[in-house]
Every structure is written in C-alpha cells, then in structure tokens.
Image 1 (cartoon, helix red, strand yellow):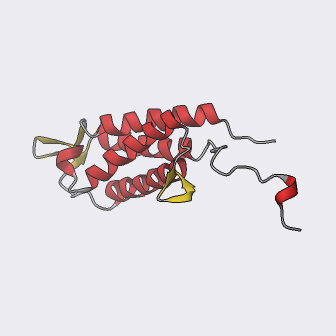
Image 2 (cartoon, rainbow, N blue to C red):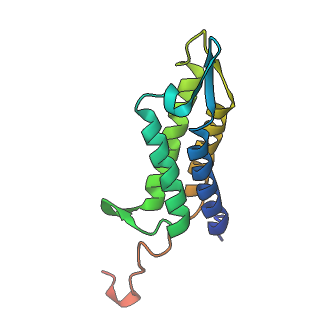
Length: 141
C-alpha cells in the first residue's frame, strides 16, 4: 500500500509554483525606507525562482510524465530538485545573507513557504507511465 496521493501532490506543486511567482512581486526587504521586491532584491537568482515556479505549475498540469534530458529523470523529479534548491537558497538568504541594516518583509517568507510546498508536492506524487512494466516472459532468468 502506498501513502502517495497523486492529486494532492499535483495540487501542491501547482499552488506552490503560482505562489512562488507571485511572491517575486511582493515586498522582500526594506532598507532605509525603500522597499524592494524579489526582482530588485536578488541578482540572477530571481530567474531560478521564476523557473522553479513555472516548473511547479507545469509538473502539476502535465503530471510530470515527461523526461528531462534523460529518459529516467522525470519532469516531476526535476521540479522536486528545483524546489529543494530554492528552499536551501532562500533559507541561506534569510539566515546568513541579509544585510544587517535591512529588514525582511513578508514576501521572502512567502517565497520560502512556496518553495517548500513545491518540493513537498512534487516529491509526493509518482509518475506511473515513465517506466513501463516489463512483461513476465521478457525478463532475463
């Protein structure tokens, strides 16, 4: 018996992706009265967060059934890896990489929650059609 719920995992990955993209437009930091969004706070990493959000939505819509550069790595697995990496990067930003004079706003915490939801959702549903079953008669003995 499996504890994996594919419909819940797909919903989580899609909702997390939409939330991560939306969080990039929210306020992430406030420094000396100037508020900065996720696009303004980050260098090139914001493009990675956008890609992670798009992958979360795409994995939810397609079920993650497509291979990504390799036939044994599903789109779902790639989205899970991206979600974990985005969570680590955002955790590092919150804990260690924020300037002392800057104050973090709600957008960065929402982005962290969204990245965790993407990783949880993409890791919670399995792709059933990527590896077809081998008929019993064709197996090597």
